[in-house]
Image (cartoon, rainbow, N blue to C red; front, side):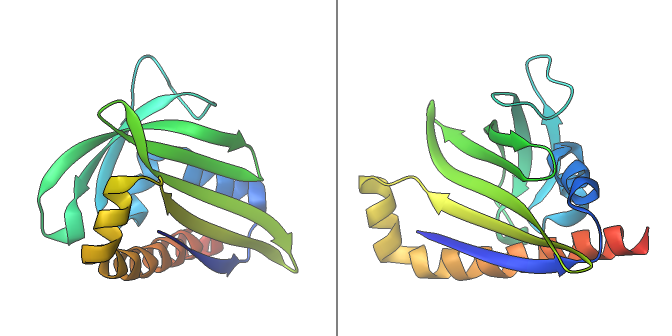
Length: 151
C-alpha cells in the first residue's frame, strides 16, 4: 500500500524543509499525530535519529505512541522516516521538496513495508486506510502551506 499527495507552496524548499523536519512541529499539521519528541539524545533531524509520535488514530482513537527512525535527511530536498513496530519498520513516510515556479512542490507519501501482514491488511481495510492517509496528507500539506505562505 502506498500513495502520495503534492501541493505547491509559495516558499523556498529550505523554509518548508526546516518546518517539516523538526518533528516537534508535527502536532501543528497532522490530523492524527498530535505531538512528537526526539529520543535517545537527538535534538534535531539527522539520518538515523529516533523520535516518537503520539497518535490518535483516525482522530478518534485509540491513542498510542509510535517509535520512528529518520531514513532521509537532505536539507531542502527530502525528509523521511520509518515507523517501527516490534523492532521492524512497518510504514515509511517521506517528504520531497522540488523547486517549481515561485516556490516549491512538496510531496508527502507513505509506503507500507511489504509482507504477509500488509497483504492481509490490504485485503481487509487497506483501501479505507489509503483513502484516509491521502485525505490526511492533503490536510497536512495545506496546513503547512498556510504557515509558510503567511510568513
